[in-house]
Image (cartoon, rainbow, N blue to C red; front, side, top):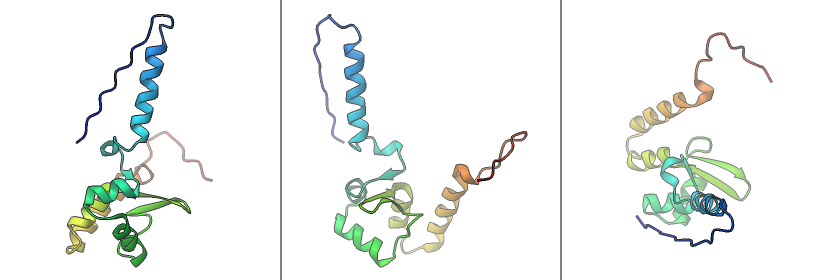
Length: 127
């Protein structure tokens, strides 16, 4: 894991400048993908690195149908694909044991908010 330390020196003309700069730096850090462990989704670079494969191999797995859209990855736009890193890692480890991987998929799907029972007293709104 690479650690980056950034020091910013400011004068005392703006007492809130330090807070604003810290928020900006945190936003840059979060957007960089460095914080991927707390998110389920990752871009092709983070996913390929996590599995120790190339982005070309990742594309080939997707195009061959070995991994499934809506489970292992989602298409955000025609050019942007986000991978479900926990499920993709599980598939990678269990690719020779589909029953074990299916359990992980089922557990993941059950954990989604859309598959949770509504709280009593609340009405569901139909689209």
